[in-house]
Amino acid sequence: AVRAKSKKVITVVIAGRPMIINEVEKESDALLLSFYPGPCGGQAIAEILRGIVNPSGRLPVSLPRANGQLPVYYNYKSSYQAMHYLDEKQSPLFSFGYGLDYTEYTYTGVKLEKKEITEEQLQKTGVELQFKVKNAGDREGFCVPQLYITDLQASVVRRVRELKGFTKIRLKPGEEKEAGIRIAFDELALYNCDMNKVVEPGMFRIVLMDQDRELWQGELKVTE
Image 1: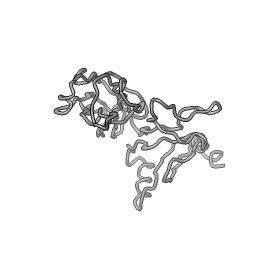
Image 2: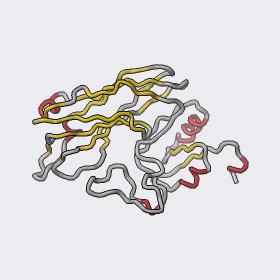
Image 3: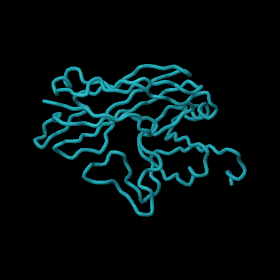
Image 4: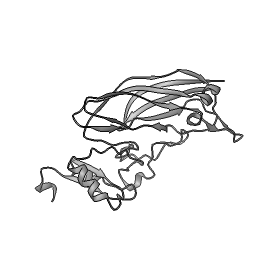
């Protein structure tokens, strides 16, 4: 009924957990998931809707398409595929890490500081994923690049993708900045069969993402 009488429908979802909102999403031109925003939430929501504040949140959970899709998460183990069905899309409605705002960002010059590193060097300095990011829109905003890893040669079962770092960068319209996310020992480590925390020699896939978009992918080799 609201859709029939409105040119634009913006839905504010107030919820403390992942909800099934696919029907609401179909009838909405925009969605704002506020979780439980607290005593100042009304003002914060109003400022976002009026464009006074540019939102910069990213989803800390994945939102399912249907109850039967639960559990739904981005980092299932490589030995076990997450729940999927023949009569429903396998992807979530909105994935972990997703989030839009009122401007756009472009990433260039993405590269690893080193493509090969020893475990000792990881302990001392780590290695940085470097990039440039530019605000390509006409509104000031915060981009939130996220770094994910996949261990391609682990001795124990690991997740297909693991968030290991992120940063938040404030950019004025047209502004460009150099930035980076550092990968250290803990970001690549696992507990082996002897329950020792180690970084095993081998290949790691490194992925840079934002707004549920894969921006860059490369490989890092760890040697003894």
